[in-house]
Image (cartoon, rainbow, N blue to C red):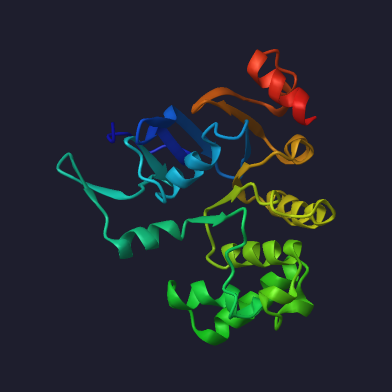
Length: 258
């Protein structure tokens, strides 16, 4: 399973199966993403979308299958045909390639927006405080929050907190950005500001895998849509083909959300 030749995929997940007790959350799922692609994953709740994202960066360990990011086997090293789990430090280093933005913002409540963005580069990447601060201010400007650098999370709206979370993810200079329904916890009037930042990231060439119910965003920004149901990939095609699909399960879902 793990033997494979290098290829042009930045994300190469093959035959991923993940069980939680007797429940099969993912059933032989494969996903390939090229550099600069934006892939949106759609599907009903419980279809395995978030579990797939978490398997990509080894927050969940697949029962079967393997994930390569930029031709680097995630979570393991292979020695003489035998897989050995990476140490926590080695896994943390691998994960710097995969920045993840969650539904909940997961900011450090006792740190300012600026401090939230500088934490990772200083602690994980070994960047100096001065350089981390310079870059963090640039990133906060990029997400439209230059004036909020000294604010703590409880003084920020949900949309502002999520934009800080995106800046924090970008501070690690990732190869791929993973978004797990990044607007689902936001009030409707705040969704647009986060999607605007995500669109600008896509336009800049960032490779993105986005779990979302925002069909308008997927239609406008995605290169491909993957539709999942009951732990399987049902469709993986262009935006037009998926949104116009006559697949009964996809049609039921899309008719309910469009």
